[in-house]
Length: 337
Image (cartoon, rainbow, N blue to C red; front, side):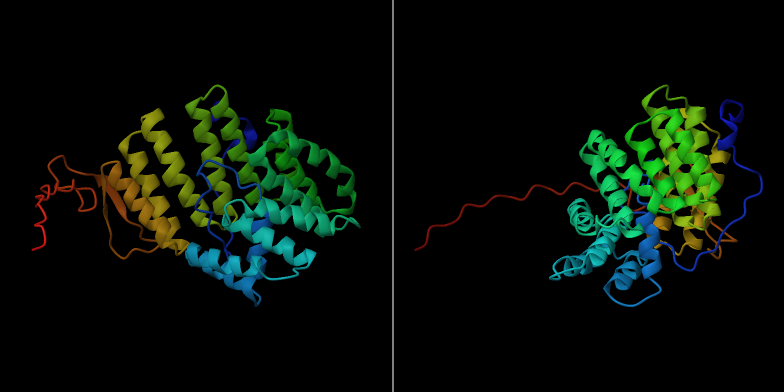
């Protein structure tokens, strides 16, 4: 497989793993193979978690897996009167990072950019990049136009702004050259989180063209490696469980021992992240594929082991077909006397 991959996508044998005190989980609505282009938003909300106020509260609610409650808190923030441009920027970052709001991030990004547009500052560039991220679902052409308009302003920005600009450009205008540019800029910054998104973009480009399973596998494995090295175990676990394992099962027809090893690794990552939802999804995915788990102490150093379910083994309760209820007998209503 690796012989077909460009050298930059190879996964090293030894990986240095970063430990983070605060890490947001991936938004529930984000597809397992889709890039998170709003990496600035994720970092902005993670920074808020060490402070006080409603944004810090939303960050911890998201980390705890209480997405519905976080959305309610965000709704309170959104209805606060007379938010400043910086507050609107942070509100937009929070919508993007959590995936809440059902499209509200785009509207908030527009308002933030309008207020912060002049003079050009790092905050105004943040707002413009956030607008580009949130506008992409509505059409790539308008995003390319926005990125062209923003390019002269990057002189007042940071190297990270240049790199994220290149990342969004590669998403809005898929081409190997633009993806290489984004990769090079993010690699120069040693931005593992951003490089994981480059791997997802490479996956998307391959899926839209030749669909070679070996390359698709390589890109997913690269994204997982970058998530782990950036200290984001829940992001890595999700990519394994919902993207890599299905690819290996459905397309590559990998042997059972590869699948069980990956499931065990995903479970260990979910435990490391203290992500109950992520751990449940590993067990659920394994069960649907016909594997059963054996659990001892359930920690990241002693993860569950998985094995093929015996053909005559009973299905788990949640998978057992539900008995059909007998249709209720209809009775005629007696007329009142």
